Amino acid sequence: MNYLKRLLIMMLLASLLAACSAQSEETVPDYGGGLNGNNFDGITLTFAMKPDICYEVDSLFGDAVRARIADVKNEFNVNIVFDEETDVAGNLFYYISSGIKPCDVLLSDSYTLHDSIRANLLYPIDTFYSGIDYLETEKWGGREKLISYAYDNHLYGILPMLWPETVWKQVDHFFFVNENIVSRLNQPDPREFVENGEWTRDRYMQVLEDYTHRNNSGDTVYALTAMPAHYFSIAIKASGIDYVVKHEDGTYSNAFFEPGALDKLTWVADSYWNNYGTSITHGTDTFTTIAQFVDESAVMVLTHLFYGLRDIQYTVENFGILPFPLSDDLAGSRWIGEFEFYNNGISFPANIYDLDAVPAVIDAIFEPLPGYETEEDRYEYYDRYVFHDPRDTRVIFECLSNCRYLPYNDNGYLIPDAINSAQGKKSISQILEANIDIMEQLNTEIYIPLEETCDLLWAD
Image 1 (tube, rainbow, N blue to C red):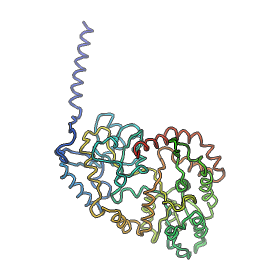
Image 2 (tube, rainbow, N blue to C red):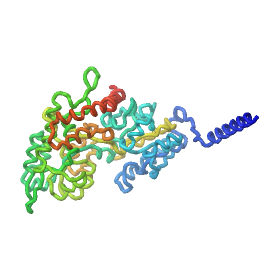
Image 3 (tube, helix red, strand yellow):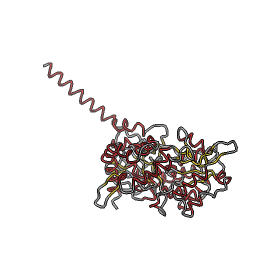
Image 4 (tube, helix red, strand yellow):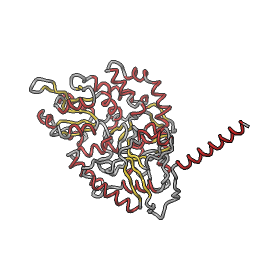
């Protein structure tokens, strides 16, 4: 009898708990396959981002962005709410595992979302059946840029490429050159070398020699200041060396052991260490290295584009921007840039359910802003307000269109860091041999599966 009583009580408690749970769960409306064309009946979509999306409140684009959002709200009959306080990206696991939809649209970076992507906490964009076409490369970024949002045969982020001020900050690394010092040294503007096809590695080595000098106080002014790992990473990419290489039969292998790679990597290391302390120096970190350039302890600095512009633009009167010279076998090819991850990417939590409204609204919002519909319009803005010289603008956007992924979250700095640690005291063969097991593990577990995912997503 006591057993039956306990059993009945337990069954009653279970039914009560189930009822309470059902009442507390979020009711998921069924919106089917779209409501009356573009009319989504006033549903509310929550955007985890600032109302100005990618811009500061006093930005030149603030009004244009707010007008665009108002137009989209009217066109699609939706209410858009901005949540700029909640750290959705950093707490996505807790929201999803608790059955809570934190937002409909998330603005974040692929660095922060790295683990969430691998934990299936984001909605796969390639499975949207309408609204967003991730294959629109000009609008959303394409394979080389979206690779940091790809995983296990799916895509989890897109980049609003057609909005000014959103993506150019991510491409690295560039030489900033103090044009006033160059002029005082009676040297030509090095941007002329870029323009006329003379910006080769031989010319670069000559520049290191020509720019090194002593100032009026007798102190050495170095031709270049650059953090070693940054230097090695972009020099490797500008040599055409990635992590893996795909062969005609569809298989992949370690790119560092391909024919010609050893000679290129040797140049990468020697060009820095053979000149370190004479024409090349560096600070203790990115920012002290930039400071050496700002206080004219160096004629050039090689650094992140975003940090460089932020700290140089209003402190150095006359500067130019140069790409890293390509290896000789790539002469005449487009300049190469690299990126570690992307900020201002658009992603979606895994438990969104407005699968018609969300992609349709995002696709409409990130059409080009009025006055910036064409590439020429956007370049004109950059020439006037950001880079101040069309030659710099062209270089940066060529590198952006031809950038290579450095997987920061997945030990992408392994070989650049190893070359840095060796400080010229080990050969490249010794460095590669010491890291071969780690490289093979990374290739097998991360880099090759990532390339295979991109092969599938961009099958054409």
